[in-house]
Amino acid sequence: GQNIDQPTEMTATEGAIVQINCTYQTSGFNGLFWYQQHAGEAPTFLSYNVLDGLEEKGRFSSFLSRSKGYSYLLLKELQMKDSASYLCAPMDSNYQLIWGAGTKLIIKP
Amino acid sequence: DADVTQTPRNRITKTGKRIMLECSQTKGHDRMYWYRQDPGLGLRLIYYSFDVKDINKGEISDGYSVSRQAQAKFSLSLESAIPNQTALYFCATSVQAYGYTFGSGTRLTVV
Image (cartoon, rainbow over all chains, first blue to last red; front, side):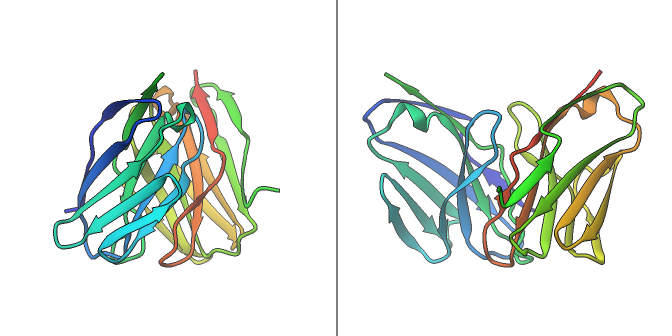
């Protein structure tokens, strides 16, 4: 079957670093996406990994290990505006994204 | 203009009424999707279409129907709305191996 597992909620402090983990099982694999979703708004693209390793984009980095079915999103220098849900979404053999429930990140001053 | 446009943005309707949510895109993508999202839950797939002649049920298609009128247009209908269809609805588009682009969402309330 297809399954995504990520923490339901995390809390971090402004200016700190937080790592959001995701494990997945899919029918085939064509990369893994991370999306950010603010409450009541549409998800927006953050990152894409198709090969093992770390992809860095400004304050956000994403890591993938295909053999372990594991990814993480690393957010540095946290800002209040980073309070949102973060969705881990692997792409299956049919190029469809499989969505988990996401991780709600709460940033405290 | 937005790449993926959903109308209406908000709608309140009564139980038993028929309602249509519309989605249009200017990205030229072949694939289009309808999702619903309930508070605290993830995106659940209602229907998807890989081209104009292709319509597929998702995990929660009961009570919904769709129409792909053109490559750029994909409509979702609730034939007889019920209160547990109150949710946030998203349309999305994609091209094979690329990520999805989402519309701004339609907040539907069934009373």
